[in-house]
Image (cartoon, rainbow, N blue to C red; front, side, top):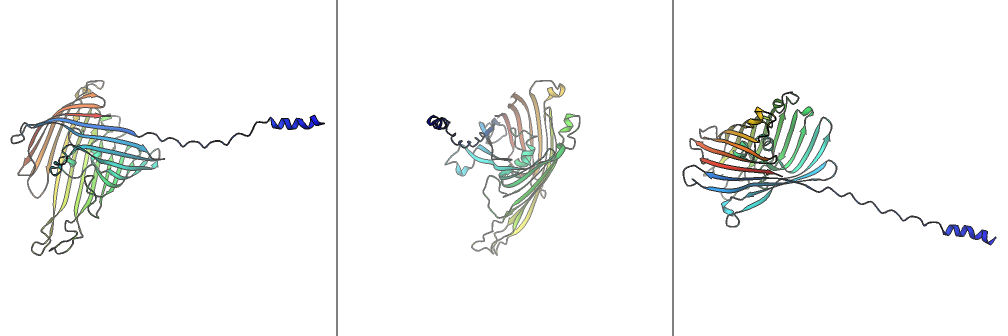
Amino acid sequence: MVAALLVPLTTHSQQAPPPPPSAPSAAPVPPPPILSGTLFSNFQYRGEAGLTKSFNKFDLERLHLTFRMPAGDRTSVRITTDVFQQTTPANDAYFRGWVVRAKFAYLQYEYLKRADWNAAGRAGLIQTVFIEHEETFWPRWIATTTVEKAGYFVPGDAGIGTIVTLPEKLGEVYATITNGPSFNSRETDRFKDYSARLSLTPLSAASQSYLRTLTLTGWTYRGALGSKFSTGGTGQLGPIGSSLSRNRWGVFAGLRDPRLTLGVDYASRTDGLELGANTAASPRTESDSTGHLFSAYSVARPFQIANTGSKIPFGVLARWDYVQPNDKTQPHYYLAIAGITWDLSNRASVSLDYQEQTPVNGVSIAPTKTYFAHLIANF
């Protein structure tokens, strides 16, 4: 009987202890940021007569570093830094070298993801309405686009925006609300700028590859600037709370094929101006200045046009700009660019090009004749 009583006790004592509670699973490790960049460099030689004749220099024109990082489901962050040489004379005593600033820095949320439609919202330092779009046609490493070079606006500004991709590869819509001064300045007044762009690719289903990339674009930019007399002052008639117009619009047509790129650009601008000192002796008055520009360019690879299987990485390019700052007066200027390119690899290219800027009828633009050797490297 004693043995019978001990058997179940022994069996119970030999049972394995219960397993310890499982440790909580570790949080997933976020993927590392994706780094890419573009280096713009050149050697230039000035050929026009005058004090600048024969001036030459090696120049690191720009270095863009872009960081892309996921920030959860459908959410991502992009930061693009712009390394450039500061050329403001007032700052020369402190530093004459290269400085860094933010060009783009925004959060993007993809609020629509479907097989036929896609849309995303952006907030932060975002792209302006047109420049980055045209840079997919014209090579930025040779020269800035016409609207940027003529001072219509710059590539980035602080604000919010949305981009909608149309179904069947028919194009996209982009709209923004921004501060207005651009990434070169903090906000300086209470007014905001509104812009929108519609880009259509109506022949995206065509059998001919050249026609599939035909892009028709229209854009508008409605802006405002605060008065320089917004706070009033001693002797003034009072503060001015109204704004001055800063409006632009344009149309663009282009083809973008690896063998041949064509682009035609027209844009117009209207800027409000203030005259007088806002005093009884010199009252403040307003006027408008309206100007326009036209640009046409081509980038071609002749060996690949003649033979689609050619691997010779030689290209030619040409561009012609006409810019009239004020339609009420005759002064205007031309910009002509011509050159050849060679691809060192699929991510690096060099060029030899000539750029001539010619003022007409006294426009306040310096005449230039510059020979360039350009280099671009994407990484």
